[in-house]
Every structure is written in C-alpha cells, then in structure tokens.
Length: 25
Length: 582
Image (cartoon, rainbow over all chains, first blue to last red; front, side, top):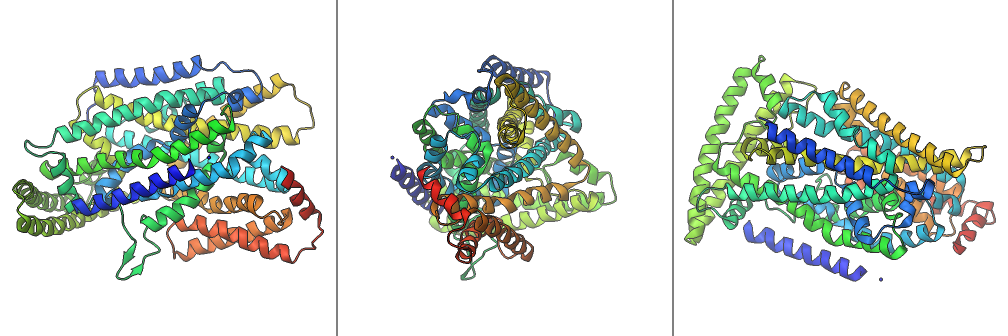
C-alpha cells in the first residue's frame, strides 16, 4: 500500500498550479 | 429569469429518475448489516462516487464558481490537505474499522476507552450533523426562491424531503447507487455549462485569451502564500499553508471521524476496496474542484465583454429598487456600468496585444486592468452595502447567485432545467448520506446499546427505517424554522460544527497513536481543549481552518499531561493496554 502515488500526484499538482498562476498573472 | 416548460420537464424527469432508481436499488437484506452497510458488498468505484457525492453538497456547485468570480481560484487550496488525509486514514483507521467490523466510527472508541467516550462523541456527531444538515437545505432553497420566485417552503420540502423516500426504503445501498447516477448527471451538466461559457466569448477570444484576461485581473491565484507585508496573515482564509495544514486536519476529521463519510466506506466488500475508494478520491478531488472553479473564471472572462448585473441576486435588487435607497442604488449601478465599460475596452485591447505578442502593451494593460478591477470591486461593495441596508437580515453577498444567474440569463431552455436539477441532486446526495449515518448512530450507539429489550433483526430493521424518517423530518423542520430566524443563526450553527471537529479528531488520534493514555485523561483533555478552541474563536486571531489544528493538538497534549498525574495502574490504562490486541 499507493500512498506515495497520491502524495506525489498532489505535489505535482501544486507545482503545476504554481506555474499556471505565474503563467497567466 | 425565465423557467420554461421544457426546463420544468427536464427538472421533474431528472428528479423522478433518481427517486425511481433509488427505490429500484432498495432491495437489501432486512437487518442492520443490509440497511446500514449494504451487506458490505460495494466495490471501490461505488465507494469513490459515494464519498464524493456525500462531500459535494448543493452549496459546492453554487458557491465555487461564484467564489472564483469574486475571489479567484485560491479556494482550491482548501482541498490540498485532503489527499494527505486519505493516506493517513487508509494507513490507520480503515484497517481498525474493518477488523472490528464496526457500524459506526464511535464503536472503536468504546473498545479503546470506555462507553462514556463513545456515547459522548456520537452525541456530538448527532447534534452537529443533524442541525447542519437541516441548515444545508436553506442556502440552495433561498437562491432558487430569489432567482425563480419559487415558494421557499415548498422548495425546502423538495430539496430536503423527497430524498427521504429512497433513503428510507433502501438505506445505505440506495444512497450509494443514487449518488453514482447523480455524479454522472452533475458533472455532465457542469461540463455543458463550462462549454457554453467558453463558446459565448466574443469572436476571436479563445480559451487562452480568457485565461490571460482573468489571470491578469487576479483571478488565477491558484497558489497564494498568505504572506502580506512581509509577515504571515493568520486570518487569511485560503492560502497554501492553511490549505495543506488546516485542510489536512479538517479532512482527517471529516473522513476519519464523521459517520456520514465513515458510513460510506464501511459498505465496501473489503478493506482493500475501502482504501482504493479513498485513495482514488485523493487523486481526483483536487482536479475536479479545479474544474468547478475554472467555470467561474470563464464566467468572469465572459462578463468582461458583456454587461454584468450590478448585483446577481434578482430579488434583493428588486427590494432595494422599491425602497428608500433606490436612487443611491441606481447611481451606484451607473458608476459600476461605467467602470465595466472602461474595463471592457481594456480587455479588448489586452486581447489584441496578446495576439500580437506586444509585451510592453501587455504590461501596461495588466496594470490598467488590475486597477479597473479594484474600482469595480469598490462599486460592487457599495452596491452590496445598499442591499444590506435595504434588508438588514441579509448579508448583501451575491456569490451564491452568480453561477445560476449566468445560467438563467444566457443558457438555452432545457439546459437551465438541467442545471437547476443538479443543484437538487447535489443536495440529495449529501443529505441522504447524512440521514443514513444519523440513523445508524441513533440505532447502533444509542437504541441498541442502551435498550433493555432484545430486538429481533426485523425489529432492528424497522426501527432503523423510522429513525431515517425521523431525522429526515427533523432536517426539513430545522430548514423551515431556521429561515425565519435569519442569517446570523445559520452562521452560528455552521460555526458550532467547526468547534467540535478538531477535538473529536484529537480523541481518535490519541486512541490510535498514544496507547498509554486512558479514558479519564482523554475525556478531560477533550473538555479543556474544547474550551481552548472556543476561547481562540472569540479572540478572533486565526481563520477557521486553524481551529481544527488547535483542537486536535490540544487534546493530544492535554491528555498526555493529565495522564502523567493519574495513577499508573488505573483501570483506564489497563483498558488502553488491552486495546493493543485490537
């Protein structure tokens, strides 16, 4: 027991959101 | 806002479909395991849809797009703690709940501590969830009452009452299967709304332009630090720290200790299916919430090119215009319209600059757009204040009305009916799960626990049905009654719920991680921690997400200290030690 997959995906989303925020600001 | 015969047809057909499907899926074995646990037969994907359907209420779909429109995307950070909570719940509580074959989360606390701890936490759950479920019926009913002119009390009965039919006949199984259909209809309808918002942008303005315009107006603030003027603002509601840490504790409380969620994943056919459902929720919840919020961003972009209402709540606007503040309101509306016209020109210029990659012009127009957006917000605040003056019982806020007003004004007939239907479906999904869990706690933690008479399986099944009906009627009654007492009471109830959440989580964390701490220490630790949470709330020094963190840590630290002063061989500790074999 996936746990690293869920946590890794969350980290990936936060990084993507950070660049998304920067890109359109 | 018109509601055409076609809209009525779509709305009524959708609601009948759900009720019929719920009744059709109502066949369960006539005992407590069948009624509350679906005989533990559910696969992981039903668990996933069920926990998502329970968490997303009507307000989720009403507020989120409006929140993105007014405050930007940063609300998505509120969900960052959820995936971490899913991992912790799967690694700790899920195996215990399955091994003990519990019906309610609070049964575990009796095995670990004593019957007093179990009864007390279950009672707090019944009190806070029972009242807050009733209150949750009000918000969507008020919006439909204001925008469509429907009778508030009749809407309440449809919003909070019709689902009692299938929730009572089919128990947890009917709740899960209706949530499955509801999920498909809700997200299909939200996708259609998003598609229309993008499709109606002016010729030559694409998704990229829309994102740039809303981003430069400050609406794509998906990640925010909470730091203002060089120091962290503890009262800032949504930033990455309150989201990851505060959101983690909120999600841990919700998924680990709130029976309305625990009752969903206890229906799984195995521990593995429970875990998969929860972990998949950890994977998809943040992207889905991002999708709902981005609809609000596209609606914001749309209104940069078309005239936005000064206030999105039609009924409130009419009320101001018929009172003594009518002239002030008209003057403020004219000022708002003129700010909007300026902003529209800037948006058109910005789109042209983006197409020609003119960096200097983009920088200049970004600054202009941000200043104009600030001016627009000032005018909207003035308008809200006038609405509040005209009706002191309201808070003047129109966030909940933005999405439906856009849908009603611009989307085609039939689609409007579908969007209104999903508000009902979202309400039903969360309320049905709440009623089922309220009935299970009443039956398992109180009736069966304290009844002197030995009940047969059939009698238990029938009592459970009556408790479901009873809680359903209680919630509708609360909704009808609370509306007359105004907004402040509704807010007070919501605040009351958040007071207990962290403390109950603290009790569960002590139960699992600190085996040396016994029942007496945790009970007094919880009481003192609760008083601390209430004191911090009234001191108004942190935003609400941090209250859960304080409550949970309060119980852990205080019960640890109290245990140091208790005799080491007290019966409490023996009970605690025994639970190691659980």
